[in-house]
Length: 160
Image (cartoon, rainbow, N blue to C red; front, side):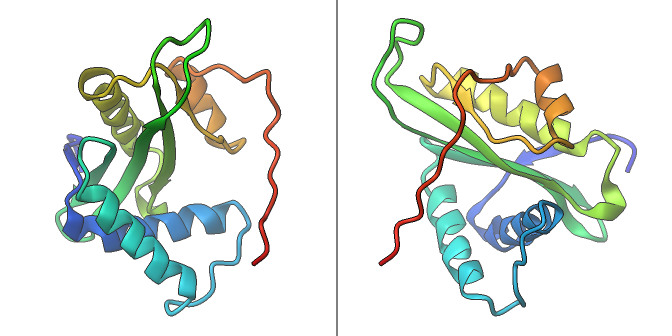
């Protein structure tokens, strides 16, 4: 790969996005289970549905002629109340930034994130983009203008 060509993902790229998500989660220390792990089918449905809603969801990917999709980034917009510093009523979330190990350190993830940020700026009304960065990913996001938040993330798992 010499020139990075980023394209907007289509619904038939959903399986590749699930594969990239598994790579990302594994890099974060999460046991993703085998190919038949239940979360994968739910993720496949999530990405197919999202990719069929281009006004609120986008993913950008990079293909290798032999390996197929090797990098990607995804995000969506959701309704959010305005605040004194953000009058918009949409907020973006950026996630699923991942690159196949053999293709890392070539700027592919950066190119996908930049394409996604362009989508947010040009095609949505989102006034703010949030993400959860790993220590390895943080320098990329800081270099693109993200700043650390003053608010600590907290999580409650709902048991059903």
